[in-house]
Length: 428
Image (cartoon, rainbow, N blue to C red; front, side, top):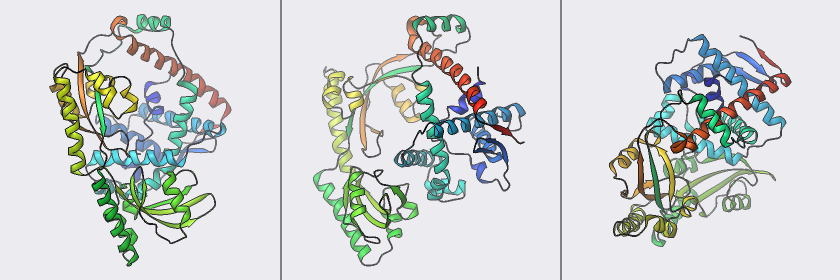
């Protein structure tokens, strides 16, 4: 089976930023070529630095670690090459969404956009541009993995055989909770929506009077991915922008600025810089909807009333089916499934641990879709203490482990086949 560190590297989340250490490389060199792809010394240093952030005890000079990291990076380049050969495509919109999520995580981790810029020694817009190609490749790898390995299953017999073989080495199942929730989107009132539109009109009037677009975007835009670069979205292929935005962008002449345009994200003031038949280069100022304190208070009141109805005897499940705005969980009575406590954000973990079984939280912020700010109340259905796994109580988890092992073996075979077809040369 593949070395476990190598497997973990291949399965890295697509939104992990390369390390800050990678930015400080003055000299770089190619350490391996994989078909037309290359592995740089800075790629290795960046991955090792990332491991050190996750575990300060990691020894960056460990030869075995460096070998495993290089092997994992070669494997990734092999899969990128294969994905391109298989004509797997990643849309610009997917890359933009990944970059948006990446930047949100970075800002949350380091506390502010300025702190991220200081650490990386460049603006947020420059970070996005520098890592756009890396994110595209990571998405290609993920798409190839989904096609090749996600449909791998294990029979009940295979799961039982796996458990019998590894039962003494399987780690205890961590403490978990079974949760459900009711989600309400924070939608603007008619008055609040009108106020945002009026602000958008005032900003456009300022533009007409000659105030710099980039300066107003930095000051007012609610799009964190483009505000710092003056609202510039760069060239975007036709069909990749939300329809309302794209239609307005193509209707404008080069250099012309739109009236406020409403999309699911809010109101946009759009300026078309250049356009071609198949792509458009724009910048915009986004004024988001649904984030006012009055909007939130209104949703908090609705959720508090639902919490009270549950306390008086109404089924949380039925209330979720009737009132929750989250389609993915609504039909299942708001069920979120069993979640390991340590996987919850620290503040949410504290709240959940404080609830008794059957207890419901106060209304809390909830973000699963950047276009739909929301709040939710959480039901703690059951607490599950840490325990040694058994087939009777943890079949699904053991099945996941068995499937992962089977996927690993299949991936190992697949990578050997790729190495026989794609030239690999290590130069260090």
